[in-house]
Length: 183
Image (cartoon, rainbow, N blue to C red):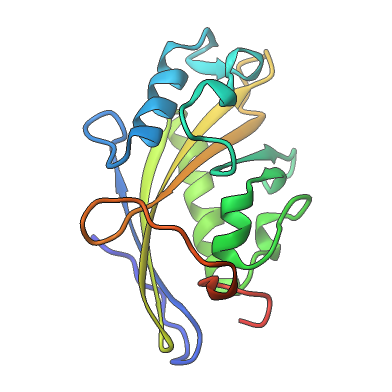
């Protein structure tokens, strides 16, 4: 079921679906990231961060993020890839997810990350956004839990693909980010 927070007409609108990443990731990068997580040595079912080579995932550089899971249950971005910056219109490196803009997007992302923590496995989210002055945008984010060694989820690894209507990846021009600090 699509979850669709209500937002003012001028602000972007968001909806999302959660998919099982093992069944059929819609992009080779997402599939490769899932397979990398599955094959990595783990503690209590959570992949060890030191065993994950983001560089080994074909075409992943720029399309990944790493968020630290803080003791209070919040998330802070340690890495925010250049393609994510281009799509959102801002670099969130060092930010809490609660600082993402607009607030409805921050709330959605935080909810999705908490779902990964609760599931203790990767989840694939299909996110759709629309705004009055742009075409609808759809992207997929595989979010996988990582441990630094104790089996506790210490970080989340995100791999993103923006998929167009014909199943091919699209890239956001620098001047057309679907979000921005002004939203």
